[in-house]
Length: 247
Image 1 (cartoon, rainbow, N blue to C red):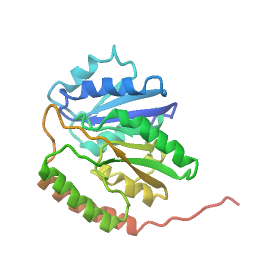
Image 2: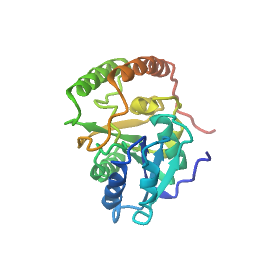
Image 3: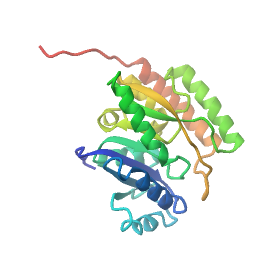
Image 4: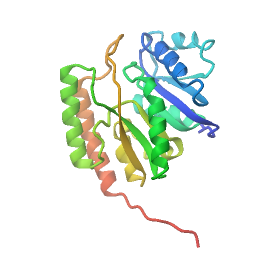
């Protein structure tokens, strides 16, 4: 897929798999929050759903002209869906939301405000990461995430209390320079810092899932996470940055 040129201030990218019960309402919420604040588009990237997600989104096009729909021919995972959405996006900045509706799009304007304030002092801030201070997940999932965040923070030193939050705001061009691999979305703050950029964590809301089931289990996340963490740790250690000037 050819990367689009940035012609809008903001694109909202929402990866989803089997979220017909959550995604239409989330798209409508997102459009209502952003209209009148900034020019934007909403890109939903369907990861080969089987539950009518695509049909539900097509039915929204008359009500949400800002909506664009991409679909994978086969399941590729959340990181690939995000990357394909970013590549197709026309926005200079990207906001991401999980398709399950647990992220609140009303927090996007807050992230934009924090970005603008940060840029007045540190133009190198290229990512705002959501921080779910009060998570609305099961006790087992909160426990697993708490330990995963502690291990990750000890190894990567990325100063990010909640790297797994789906709500993020980042510069499109900076993201497209990052190394791509499956599950990279879990390590975006560390990867941004590796590239020489600054990141900030911002407290955001979190909502309970109202329809469908989670696509992840704690054991599967842990096994994949251990392999990914080793790889990202290696990348961080092998990074070499230098100021360059043209002579």
